[in-house]
Image (cartoon, rainbow, N blue to C red; front, top):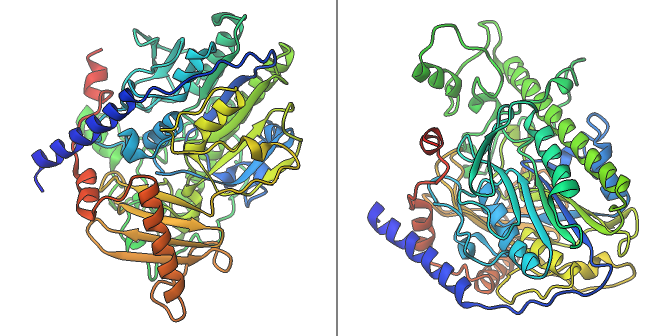
Length: 537
């Protein structure tokens, strides 16, 4: 299929999606309850479940997050929250719309175009229902935010934003370079300032409070740079995965040992390099180019050196986020807003902190598929509650609307889990979750794939330029090291899971042919916030 045909296919898909959104007119009901809650939706970027101590995972004792944990301790912790497409922009689009990537039209970061801001989103429904709405921090969707009374979002570095001297777009008009604070502290400052000074205090509010951290390249604020400086941190159990029996896993470009670059690991360049040479110096390593900081560091020692440099900076960035979350909780308490505010902490997806020897996300393997999620609202939720139902990021929008007493549009594909938040209620929930990832080969050569996860099993199909299946028994093999597909005694189970995939593909309108799925990967539509455009601002 040619690029021209791919582009036509992509534009047609986006046009159909937009038309469907515009022609749907969901009814909206304003909640007249005097206790109508405020919403503070806090989202980090690439924050792994294992790096939040409330989950009691392998890093809990080493890198505690006491302020984030407060939300879980005073509310509910979700232990099986998953995303539908583990990459920043598509996950954010799914959260805003309550829809899968192929329906919202935003299914990949790299050359997949930008988010269609004219479509229905939950902030628009809050706004129409009398809420004051705002988004502060990372956006990463290209087009300017819609549905917000106030917005201040990062636009430099391809829409990623930077840790230092981040460039913000305020209210879709004014460009502001913030040089005084680290980006995490700046977002915290702006969010609290809007609550205190920027809103109509006669109305309830919905704030999306969103950090760049702990996204690559992991540049912590000065106050956290000495954390974890005493000795090495441990490796996860499957740090030295050899990818046996998993072809797609063996061909990726996201190994800590082989695919981290000099920028990631803060290796200073030699003096006198041109701008072009500097770019090449910093990106060296992305595709397996061998480098070492000195000639004597090789093999397992080199892999460990790269891991230590990476994991420590990542956790230092997390420490900054934890401090900012604590500042927000304290601010809400000091201003008598804490208990009438629904407070959520989550991330756009999970992340690999050395599991399988990797960094980054994208895969349907647990570490990036699973998202942190905790929610505090004492009006409804008992402290220290824990939920283990199979939930998805497309459920966020309907749940928030439900909590505010606003009707949930039929076009949302997610389901409100508000009933799960209430004590002593038994609710029937889904028995499986469906996933689909499209982007290839940039940035990490991860094969497009779809799959299903049940309470115990996971089946994944890699389909772009290979036809490979993986089957895991998560009870016996939680680290997903043994592919059972095609082994003795798994035929009936495999067919049952394939039938479930087909059922969910029909339900979520993802029952395209493989050729159509591959065509979505091949689409080339440039993004709005690329570096060339930013430099012209």
